Image 1: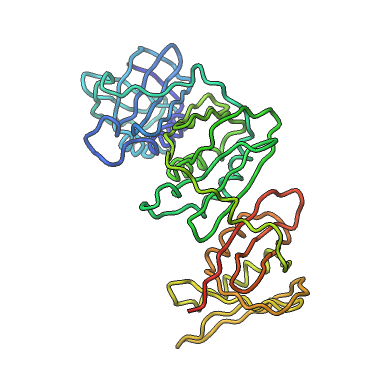
Image 2: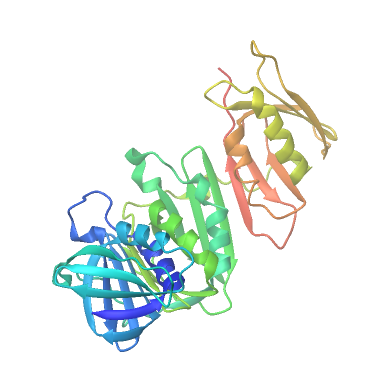
Length: 372
């Protein structure tokens, strides 16, 4: 195998592939990236047997062939090619030689290879009926729910984001049992029936990085597999969490007695200041909601106390609520609106955070910290 390619294009694909390799065993073939030249195309593959990445870039093929090399080490080598546009890769016995082309710099890297026949069979995009969705819409869904997914592996069925078909589009939900985030998106195209699934957090994190650079994406969902095809013909897939996601609708309050409308930026800034005095592991702050006024305070400690007052639109009775400031702050950060509202029934009842915009279709549930 021998080919010449644009270094930046190749490096980008290798860095993406590196997220899909096996990280649990340093001797497994799945720590390697698969490279194959066919005509003037380089095919790049990586898998850890649960997730997979297949992509390609145009190259100048001098000799067709295929091999596998350490994905991490190949990425490290490509980072070292600073100020170089084109590189040549050539297999020689059990090595892959990598050197610059058309540059005054003269150096060569030699990387050990493993026979590509040992590389595992991967999923294919063939014979799958994908449906289209705007990748930025899907990325927005991830941003509004990802933080609420559980990190507790003993509750692995919550360690991901639940995706389901709804009337006119799709919805995504995440919860760790103490908070919940929900968002829905309308789809321009008719969404076919698909099973409701829970996508693992690891795959979601990787996907959110890749989606920053693409336009349209296509989805195909099976009971235990999600497949994604991107506009540049990149194909991604992941196994799914098969244990059932809880019936989340039951914990979302429909009608609430009280509503407090706040400026988003003012609230975020106030919480960031008040949290400087939070020392308790519960990350507790207090919300004292009064007519047209919200007072945020920390506990009194040996170092002092923080207190901040901001304007709000509220005409109900005075309410005092204790919350984990991270749980309250996390859903506010991705909001791109001017105002949001806190909706509740009482001091120890569920809080529902909503955007004050009919164009936004998301909500967040935060459980207050109960008094000791």
